[in-house]
Image (cartoon, rainbow, N blue to C red; front, side, top):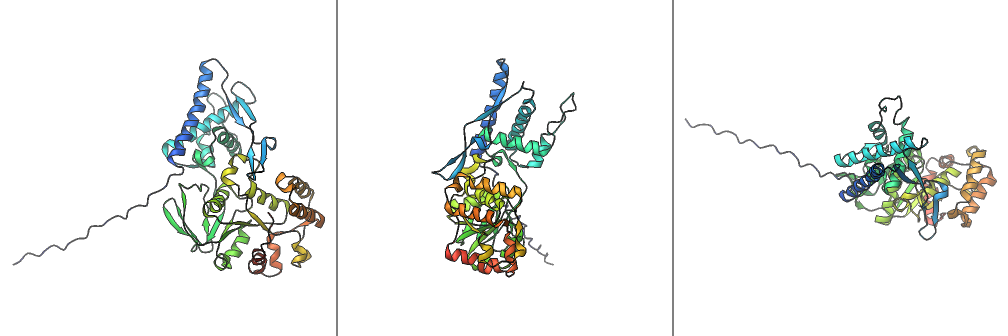
Length: 389
């Protein structure tokens, strides 16, 4: 009797894993690590030579900010503050700076990242022999981390630290996020959550058919545009930053503009805070002027909404929100920003806002029609190229 042949068994194969990108390029990691080592060497050298150890921290203040008219961005000046070990008022911050530098070096070595909250806990402990904690709260840790960024000449991302995700994108673009391909045309109602770290080593742009980017202030407005498929009808990318856009959103917008040549249009509230959001997107922020080269978008345009829209769109008196003293003070401050001061359209806009005595949210356009903002207001502005610059 012939023996039965064993059935051939197909060997299971495990799908090859996609190559994951590093949070930061190896070259930048090497440079950041070297900067941390130089900082530590300087402190150790001072101590060994009997000198008071200290570090110089660039000042992140209005007085140390300068407007580069040629580049049309904010830049940090040369003023610094010395943080010394034996100065009672500075000793704690000196210690905190070195603790965070040590923590960042460990992250770089491990090729891992931590959230701002995680970094706070990584460096949190009670100093031996005392009841003194290294940090009282995360806010204290975050501030010193920003000091460390500017003193090392690096960015938070280069220290392998990220913030909470805040911001969403949808539209005619495909991106690769840490090895995963994401089609932003197929993101449903929720959209693609823009990560905190948007460096080229993490996010790469693939197929992009979009003609421009429309950035809106809040997720509620973004949802209206997404539900109405505005990005499909008008061949664009839609983003939102949940108010003041975080670094990840600003960095992504900057890259979309610089690398893909996409115009950036902003739809924000008609109030001093909406004007400030536009200012930060366009010129950079005063507090983080050292990042402007990689964040600011000098060619960004402001679509609205504007003070004239109350009459122009025949809006109901119900949409008016009275300006308070804080609003008025802020509006006057913004009008004196050098990048707005010499622009007649912006002076006219802020003057009209103050003259009206009230502010308006983008959602006020819903009183005209549920989809008035997506079907009439923005399309009209785009067609007529009616922007503030």
